[in-house]
Image 1: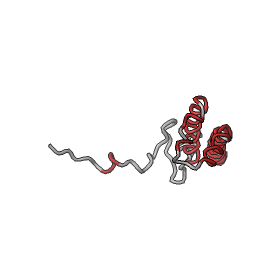
Image 2: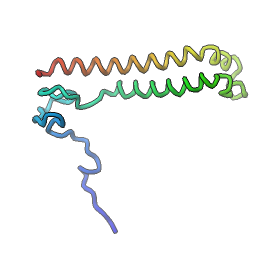
Image 3: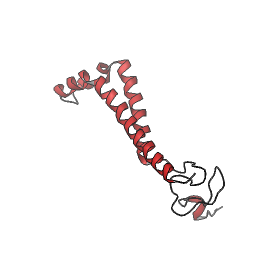
Image 4: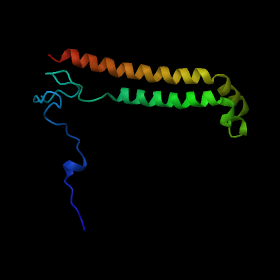
Length: 121
């Protein structure tokens, strides 16, 4: 029993020609924001990476609450000096991961804000 799928259903790479919010026809150069209503059509990659770093920060925060000593860094697979440095600077690692995620998300938001201000609403 073989089923055939069209290429369009399997890989919808082309964007639709209408805005999902206001149903206005989109021009060819509108790739980020609808020029009619200002609806965000795509999320920048930097924002997606920022969300990933924020999730990584949550995982690191959970391991920080459990105790960085319980990670097994002193078990021998890592040099002892590097393990001690990681354990002592673990709060900075957690804070830096959150800050990097927030900075990447802010960069994506600023890019969308610039595209939205360029679009005539």
